[in-house]
Image (cartoon, rainbow, N blue to C red):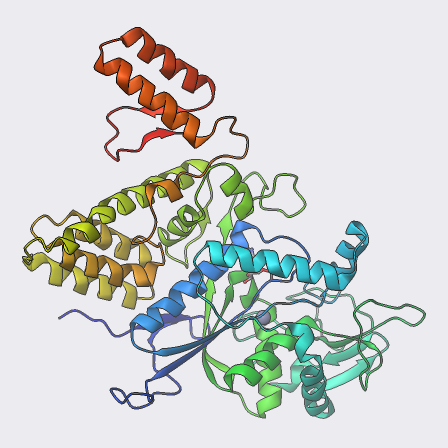
Amino acid sequence: MTDTQLKLYNSLTRQIEPFEPVHPGIPGVPGKEPEARVYTCGPTVYNYQHIGNMRAYVFADTLGRTLSWKGYKLTHVINITDVGHLTSDADEGEDKMEKMAARESKSAWDIAAFYAADFEKDLARLNVRETAHPRATEYVDAMIEWGKQIAPEHCYELDSGLYFDTSTVADYGKLARAVTEDGEGRIDTVDGKRHAADFAIWRKTPSGETRQMEWDSPWGKGAPGWHLECSVMGEKLLGFPFDIHTGGIDHREIHHPNEIAQNQAFCGSDASGARIWMHNNFLVERSGKMSKSSGEFLRLQLLIDKGYHPLAYRMMCLQAHYRSELEFSWEGLTAALTRLKRMVMATAPLSELASQGVAASTDPQMASLLERFAEAMSDDLNTPVALTVLDEVLALKKVGAGEKLAAVAGLDAVFGLDLLTLSRTDLRIRPKDATITEAEIEDALARRKAARAEKDFATSDALRDELAAKGVEVMDGDPLEWDWKL
Ligand code: AMP
Ligand code: ZN
């Protein structure tokens, strides 16, 4: 018997658990579908996102797609932190947004709007489905109300702001499994804090200073602490408890334990706000190009400039399990692009064959492959195994085109690789520094073909060399019929 009940790894229990929805609805009754509600911590938009950040959203989107495929009505929120939090997670350092605003001679509001738009563009390029993208600045009033509610029992005021006393909730740090005694665990140097792990709910603007982004509050003019926004937006948009909260693995240590502490304070119980907390592991790059301060930092646009289709990066992410570290390399990305090309080329003829009504036949293997796919995805989103099943589906020989196309469409709804719509032309992205156009390449290749037909190999070779000098590799006999690449 195959097991296709959805199971997910919960960072809270450090165990794989069956997914039981908070709102089970009435299965089979239209309008009463079981629901899944997911909150994903989004970016702080003071700079471009690097591709490591984008791994977090490819993961969250794959989770969302899997829930939809399982029949859940999905509500997914990815928030946008458009108010600067500090350069350190521990309430120290400069305000990231205002620092960038000063560097780029723009207002903090313009910086946030610019990088939020760039982030949304990258989400679309990676085929991350539409979700709600609430802005933190739209929820400041709600954050102040939350603060007022939890302050009497859980917070204390210092000159620098309102702080959450982490000793007032049960099991603080259970998610991180951190040591929380003073002096151990996290080091933090804000004067007057009762415990090292205490964190700001509200950061007061220092007297004599003005910030571009500041609001009035019962604790003085200032800005909310970073952790507060996710608690508030999660509660307002999804209701407590909701099903799943996601983020990168770094959030398991500080940001999410702090969110949980706030949620416990707000609910007046040990409830964590979300039932399941899931974390993607990091994309790593050894030479430091992922750092936003490095010159050529690895963002999606750089990959595109070098001639990689963005979905090759999505493929690269899917080829690793989300809980494994993934090492970035250009060779790895090239291999992912080749695999994507192979899948696109294998899918391309199917629609035409299907529309020609080529006699449908069934391959007994199809059913067992689809079952293996379901088993892999249900097993904590095992995308690397599920992708090998897709390879096998595409390679089936006896199955009718229509049936194969339907199967590929079903699987790709979960992968989000656009296999049915991408074409060879789409995948051939022109590198930014290319000096030759597609039309010129096609023209030279047509002349070369003609020369070869007349056995004029001297001309044919000369054309090939001419193209090579412009960075075009002619690929005679390429099994993918790619013909050329830049
Ligand atoms: P930030 O804007 O720093 O809060 O990051 C946005 C999201 O990206 C968070 O969920 C982080 O945990 C995640 N993240 C940051 N760096 C990486 C990385 N190298 N690989 C995967 N996820 C990352
Ligand atoms: Zn968050």
